[in-house]
Image 1: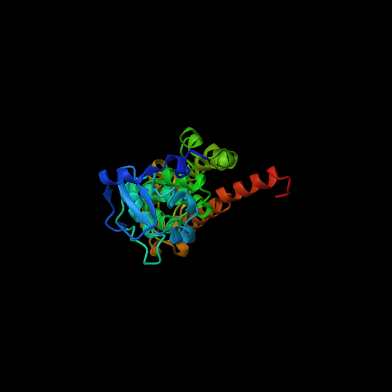
Image 2: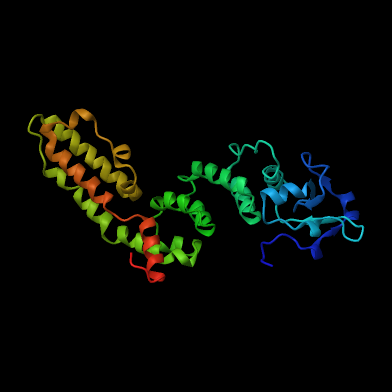
Length: 289
């Protein structure tokens, strides 16, 4: 049995210990399985719903009567986590996770992965997207551990400029090589080359209005500062993160506009983390990529 597996019948607790425990308000009766949270709260759950909507909880013969004695199966999660998690196993509207702070959300998400509560897994991933900018490393590590590829690829651009030492021990060995290649693609030359490119507009002019040239140089200077502080901007939608007033995109400003389009096109040609993951898997299996 793995370290994270639910308790076996050998670790179940006799029903006599119920007297000292609290009982969940939502799951206080009507269940044929009794679980105890790490903070000593009991949950009476119907086994048929666990079997239909989860895969990681103990089997029926482990949680019903054994020689005339009820079992109480201890779990390592808190009552707050289990109260949310068990709601996903019943045929009802799932609980709302929108009010959960990030640490609580991650506890529910880890429990959902551990016990294969699939509806909870899906909703946790949806909710997690709201925290991507604030907690990219934590979400990246979670997505990597549980093989949530879409989330993994969504977060990767936010972390590519972080030192490899901050990432290496947070990800499975299976993606260490592709992450290293993805990281190296940007940190070795690309972002330095981009910053060098931001000096070029100092030599440009505007054929129609000198104020246009002044505007462009000021904007480019601001962009240079932004990118030095946050190189990941180069991997986002540059039209949104580094925008230009439309009135400064006329033909008279072609030198600046062409330069800007060249910067954007350069980064569109860079390989994504997904590319390196697929490349690595192909090479490891002997396939041509």
